[in-house]
Length: 370
Image (cartoon, rainbow, N blue to C red; front, side, top):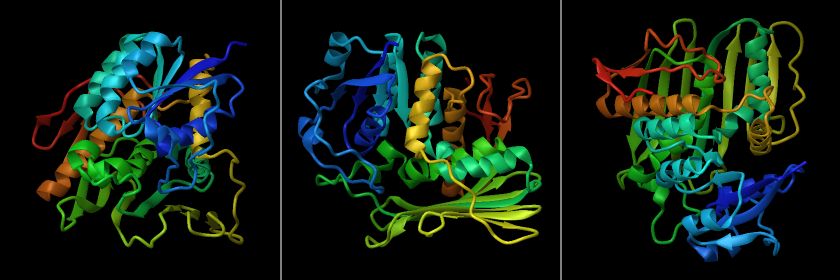
């Protein structure tokens, strides 16, 4: 069986994390890496999780510092984009236009309007586009999803998701691009998006969002909290870059079902506990692969023609960014922002759909449609 020839573009913390997963796959080979900063390719990296592969690249992996030259020189099947957010759209579109398959790190792009361009390119392209929303594949979240889809504990009454971290600073070189909200979207788009996307994936598009945020003394948002409008449940999420430097990154959720409460906490010795209505609390068996590994295996299987896998479609990822756009607007204006499906869209809650949808904001203000 022919192996997928893979290029990783952007070789910092996340690029090395993806590299460590691609190395494990029998049906893929990392042919080359590309980074405009060649020194970074040899540097050790640090992010908010200890998951990056810091091993030296073998001689068989070619190194480039120019994206165009790499595309011209290599015969690739996959381009894995792990670059800063502003570069996602132009490089993904360029690769798609060449007929290549693209795995693009989250966030998909800086706003829904830019995501629309990526969706349009993917619809015309020979290759496939998947956005790496790893939390959908995280072991605790996969178990939670199984409970929701099966109805094992009844319907969800309430859900709260949290994600707290010190402000990013591991790539500081005088300044940190994450703290420039025009480039990263700030805490709302870079980190809070994880839980917004998971809420969207699990419960569908909310009718509206109400958000509140706090601004750091240097001008960037360091805390955001959102209530998502669903008619049959209370759903909230909070994310912070306001934590002290000594604080260790933490995420979790508390989901109240009719007949159980399911709690996850990344700091806990037992990361997932179910408190059933009857009987004693228990810790369910978690899938072994990490979210990063499962998402990349899913993408590779999808590219290989496996119709049974459920990738994160470009349309679904775009809509999650649109929800964050609405959250940022709500936090800025202090008012609820509506998100309404196009009546003709008939969009399924499951991300497998490729049905056309449109999001409408506020007092009739229309977003870009796809």
